[in-house]
Length: 135
Length: 135
View 1: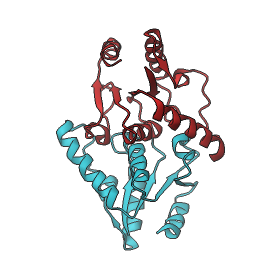
View 2: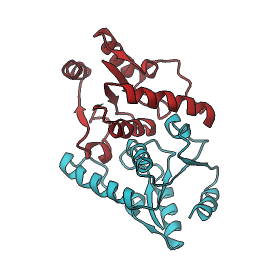
View 3: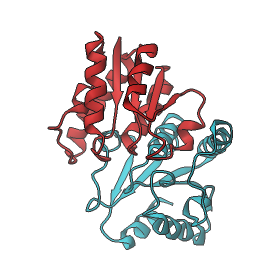
């Protein structure tokens, strides 16, 4: 499957290693993660100016439209991820949201939207078990 | 004008006092801020379960669709605000985004999206000057 993985970039990288492990797991199962860079430790986190950020926006929204499913890790709040989830909904791409409820409360704009499949987890193993069922 | 003010709730309340001052300013100019509660110090910040969060979601999205303009303060990352901005774009509601670039880098999903009017500011006075021009 073509997977759009969504995780915080400029909103904060506290969970970057978890993103990397989720992406690696999905790749190990034979899936194509279009946004592999979200798990990278070498991302540039500063603004690039509106023109160069527009190139990022155009690439990411094109990937969203062509993906089979969105897998989002939402424990760390992120404006970009919130935008991506609404964008995926607009284009009828299924969305699965993971988060650790011991670390955050999820926005009512996500928990209150019946379009989204929401997966609270306590241990990382629960994420992989859920991914096996989804993908 | 009917204004949808967007600011972080469950994503973090570090800027709640600023939200309150922005809302009060717009009200003092005769505008109707539909989401006045975003500036309140008495908000419940925990999840309410999907059914009760759905009532919040339904109210907020109804307000988004009926608003004349969205004014968002985006310095504090928030999944809900990111969702709201994309939702407003989908329904052709003009969106003005304020943020303090000395405190954060804004997501490329916002800076790269030419639909959004983006207002970086260094002092709070700059916000009110910009609001005078917008409203």
